[in-house]
Length: 305
Image (cartoon, rainbow, N blue to C red; front, side, top):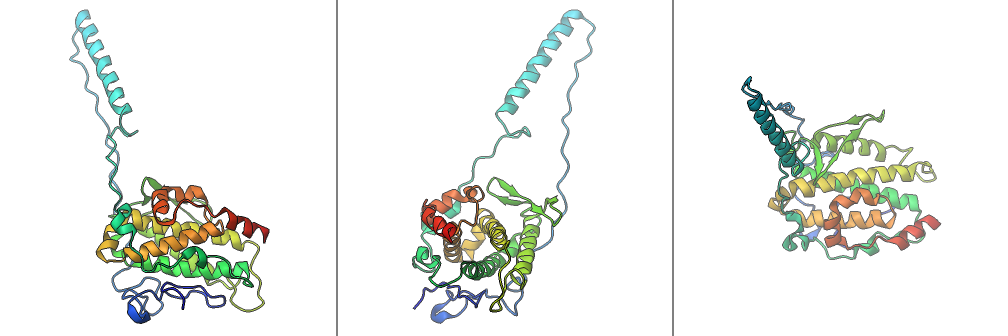
C-alpha cells in the first residue's frame, strides 16, 4: 500500500490527494465540477483602491531677525537640527520610519512544524523510478503539484484580498509579475496568484508542451518551463505561510500545508528545479521541515541522463 498522500503515475497526471478523511474520502474542500478555485465564495478578489500618495515634509523657517548675532545663532540651530534629523534617519528605514520589530513566525513554532498528514519518507517518493522517462516523471509530478498548491491556496483565498495583501509579499521579499512582453507588473497577491494559476493551467493542458498521447515527444524547452512553473508555485506556498498561516491554523489544514511543502521542496531539490536564491526567503522553514541537504547526488544523476 502506498502512503496516504499521493503518487504521480506516468500517463495519469493530475491525480488528486487521497489524504483526507479516513477511508480515503477527499477533504471537505475538494474541487467541485473541475473549477479552478475550490469551494463556494473562495474566488480571489480584485485589488482595492490604491495607496495614498507620499506626504511631503514641511521645513520651518527662522523668524527673519535682522541682527547679525541673531542670524548666526539661528544658523547654528538650523544646522544642528538638520544634523539631528540625518542621524535619526540613519537609524531608521530609508523612508525615515523606524523599522518595525520582526514579527514572530508562527509557522516555525514546534507544535505546528511537527504536524503532518503522513509520516511517509518523501525522499524515496521523489526519486525517479527505473524504466520511467525523466520528462514524463517531471510532467506527472509538476501537474499534480499545481493542483495541490491551487487547492491549498483556495482554502484561504477569501482572506487574501487586494486590501489585506496589497503586494505579493513573502516575508521581506516582494514579487512582481512579468507579462508576455517581459514588462514588470506590480499587482496584489490575489492578482499574482491568479496570473500564476491561469498561466500554469494553460501550460499543463497544452498537448504540445505536456503531451499525454503515446509517442508524442516533449519540447526541447520542457525542463525550463517546468522550472518556471515550480518557481511560481513556490511563491504561492511561501505567501500562504508568511501571510495566511493563522487562517490555515484556524482551518486545521497546517498538517496538509506542511506535508505539501516537504514533498514539493524535496522534489525540486532532487531535480534542481528551483534556484536556491528563490527559496532562501523560507530557508528557516525548509531547514526545520526538510533539513539542510541539497540533494547533490540526485542532481548529478539527472545531469548524467
